[in-house]
Length: 68
Image: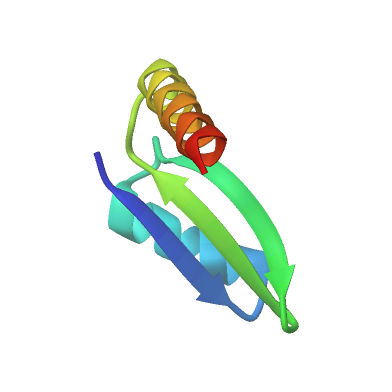
C-alpha cells in the first residue's frame, strides 16, 4: 500500500503527477484546496482494501480517544 500527497497549482497538474507516480488505476482519497494550491491524496490500493484499512484505523483512533 502506497499513499501519496501531491500539491500543484491546478487539478490537471496534480492528477498528472498522481498518474505518473501511481498509474492510471490510482484511487483518489481526497482533494482539497490549500493556500491556493490543489492537494490530492491518492493510493494504489484496491478500493475495498482501502475502505477496510480506513475502517480499522478509525476504530483504533476512536478507541484511543476513548481511553484519554
